[in-house]
Length: 512
Image (cartoon, rainbow, N blue to C red; front, side, top):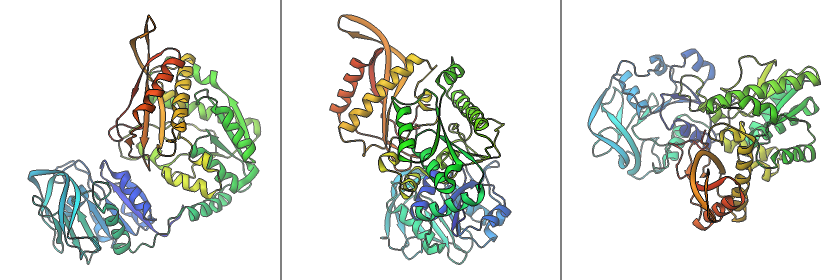
């Protein structure tokens, strides 16, 4: 999508980089995360209103530490350096970065100069999350200190004339009070953004661009029935109508009764061409004996494409394949120089050869909450837009170890009970994602007078707005107790239920 206003976030491998992007988007300003060594030519091509240098684990004075092109500082573009980004700015522009005698980790009060454009509207003290060993011991020429702590003489600095700003703390995390306001001040007071990134304009422009791009040619949409692919399908349907055919691959890895529900929604609620392919046996044969989660994802991704190719040949020439890839998929798949967290079947898991002219991913730049807003703008019913997220590889990555038909049935039944009880308790709107996992762990149990040796089911429930970070949900004990009792009593071959209380990070939301 074209934008009059774009902020580029240079990725120096900080753990909160995606959060920075989310905070910028929340201010109605479009942004992209790009590699730290992006070329000057590429920056000029994108015409950003501002640049943000992220944090990172390295020390700027070491030989192999990531460095940006020094000419960036000659482009006349405002720059905000966060943590490592501030230290890098200092190092390149002639200041001094030193190793601290006393490290700072945790939320600490920062004395700030609230006349700075970065801190307008602030008190003269603000609690901020510090996480650093190195510090700026001497600011570059033309800079002034605008923040400090008891142990860090330069917690923030600025060069107002050149619009260069640096902060040692992390404004993107909730631990920093008014952190989002700092980012907003940078965007509006320093970069002079107006905030034209809105879902309504995204939908309107996307439909227009898709009409122009596809014209009267045909497209296939990879429809899983989840939020992302559903929104992508309706967006394309609005653009090209009957030239879109949705291929719904029922790989047998869906939740209980979900295949029939998806078919009903898209045949009856939307006037969309839909082909349902029942391919359970085909997928299970490919996955037989496979235990590695990355291998599972790649097998499923390739098999998805092969099914689409076969269906495309049946309906004639098809030029485009449409997928519901979203921004976290792209980031987590480690495209560029970032670390691969996990391959997504519709990003890093694609086979080398795809028999289509081009793959279209209309939601590729959106975070999950933005996808939902897009769905509402498109007129998709709320019960579909806000349904439980479900990964493309389906239950394959919620079964630890190899996948069999028996294991699938166990997990489907356990998961259905968990989801039913959460809804009955009225928690389905509060918890953003909840599901069951069939672990590969068996343990001894006793039922009646008999000894059992059966599977352990793990329950997972998280609260999140962007799915890049999440906290575990504090489900009342009595509800967890009821879920556990029902699963053990109603689902054969399960004798133990556990609850996952790990946030993201350090864990991912899915187990595999």
